[in-house]
Image (cartoon, rainbow, N blue to C red):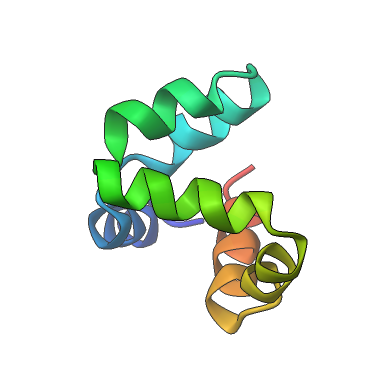
Length: 75
């Protein structure tokens, strides 16, 4: 992924996506989420991830697919 596209993505989500990816790979995603998302966003994320149907719906959304595509390009 081009650096300017990654910068745009980071601005849009409000945190460094590469750092989130590293945290997930290191088993520290909870810590990262708690530090970088608001309390409300953290609660919503955990609710979605604990609900199989909601999680599948989220992962199948066009936005999630685009994010995954961008993350894979950044490898």
